[in-house]
Image: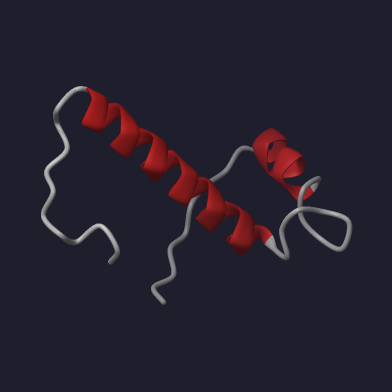
Length: 62
């Protein structure tokens, strides 16, 4: 799996950390970031579909 580096404001990272760990919704920060990216991309796909901008190329599951 490729690794990336990003700069995240401290306030946003602190908020993220409230949802990570034993009592949180996510196992670790990477899990939380991946889930957020997936949800954002799904939302953008829904918006594009409503506006007729989504191409069905058969690669949606990749």
